[in-house]
Length: 445
Image (cartoon, rainbow, N blue to C red; front, side):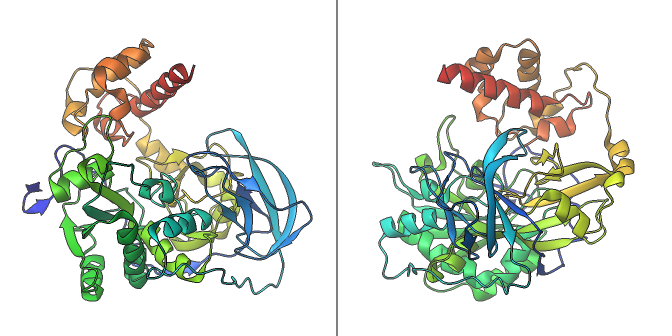
């Protein structure tokens, strides 16, 4: 649908973008930490199974863990070094998860050797799906859902349109912006793989209008085969959510409880497509990713290509953050990201940003919670047309089953729009996360 001349969706909010300090900074390689911690569970699904042993020397890019079933992906060594131990490590969720502790070799060139290539012209769709799983590729927009699972179209379903998500509506983050400017050929190479796997006949790259340089750059290099459309979108949060993108670009609404494939569409992040195009032709696995490191507490802001498993504390020290000055650190953006409970957690494939706030900045955003005043702002903001006020009331009373059955709780994707506009400063998203967790536990029981 179109509003004010540009394609968009109904409802949503307009948080401060806060992208100016990093959007023009090119991607730079981040140094290797003295010890890298590679969690074996950094994607949706089952953790990977280690195929290395303690004391073993590994080469950068080497497979160190294999997928455990279909909904799982491989892990690769982010550096050449020695496996010091295989043990539990802290995760952003607060749980301890199995991980491989790797000490990089000092003075190593850290070159990545090529493996068995998967050429787009010579490989079958099934072979491409397998190669994506073995490369360890997951959604790099933050969800970290295994990409090969998303590409496995269920029997009886089909896809006519492939959408590459270049909206990047989350405040502070500019990783996708820089990838579109610096890895254009990788994106189009990845697009060819994705089209072959899905059988889609149409491809669209959606870019918010605050990235005109990225849209122009993509248009200038867009191939004639396969044909691809570059569409500008109105700047609005959460424009980058896949259901919102489908509505904006195709005018199709994904029904409650359904997936994009049910309306013959598939959405893949531009950075994910770029990794497919960069890694598969050379038979490599993902062992680093682009991360925006920014926020009031960061002195050396930028977009960095950071090895997977780099400890958060090392990242902050390297970019000039003084630990005593930090009040809160988000992995991802402040709207949908998670606040880090510890500085000892490692960065994973799903980490698109590190946003560090000082005490002063946190004090300016600290808000005292008050009772709901029934203003209706949250209803006007929710892109899924839910009733966050009613959901919040039910959550406070512990009526989780009613939230799911009567109020479509599970349609909430935790964008935070309701919390952003709430004048009473109710922690609605946190309440909904707890409620959804309780509903899932009840269903499993």
